[in-house]
Image (cartoon, rainbow, N blue to C red; front, side, top):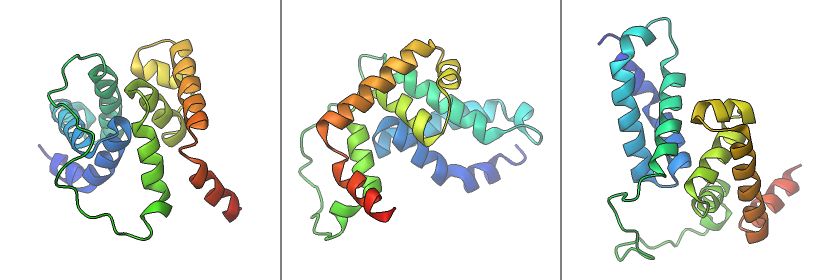
Length: 168
């Protein structure tokens, strides 16, 4: 279809980054984007040229990520440590704020992570998140509150907060 390959070619990296934030994993993030792009392709006739295909794709990704949590089997069994991990001898890796935030997000249950990404990364209001995910505003508030409380208590983002405070 006209315009779809250009859309995918130009927006795929940004969509994958968003998928990684929503799922906490690069592989699952890419899978999420692929599933969302299939739905976008099916709706392309009404999205192009006057629609907003990226907004549509992101909304599909959010809903798929939200529903994915409810499935019992995810097809993979995570291990504590991968045997073929590369040597992490990067002296600056500990200071990489993006990686620290992503690592902290990975510790959260999926629905809490999704709510935080939509609230603080996408900048949506609680009511907009509730509408997008098909849940109540109270659910959004409680998931966000629990997630923030956990992150504060875990002190996973202390280094990031100190670095940000030093810049101001």
